[in-house]
Structure formats: structure tokens, C-alpha cells
Image (cartoon, rainbow, N blue to C red; front, side):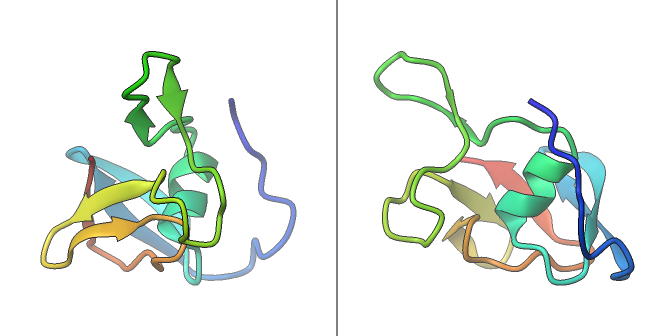
Length: 91
């Protein structure tokens, strides 16, 4: 799945790392938005064997989009803003 950004293209571009690879995001993006907009279609594998997962509730309640951020620990990607230089690992 590839998402296409339709609005906010004028916001400053920032760089962060996901699993060791540098990706681009826009200032003000959540981690979930940044990861999906960069062409990464998933955050984790389902523990029930039904494939990759990319968030569910999109408001920080379900814990389906948890990722690990250096210095912060586990966070919900849908409610955490991406920051320049952020090191993120899929949980």
C-alpha cells in the first residue's frame, strides 16, 4: 500500500530512521503518518498470524501501532509526532 500526500506538502521536510533506514517526513506528522507516507505499509506482524498491521484506532487507545523510539521507549505511532533524527524500531 502506498499513500499519497494530498495536503500539507509545504511543511518542512525532516529525516528520521526506521529500522536503520533513513526516511523523509513532514514537520507535524505523526510517526504513523510518516511511516505510511514513506511507503512502509506496516508497523508490526499480527500475533494472531493474519499478516502485517498498520494501526487500528488512530487515536492511541488500541496499542496496535506501538513502535520503539530511542530515548522514549514504546510509544503509539498514531499519537507521537516525528522529530528530526528520531530513531524508530518496529516493535
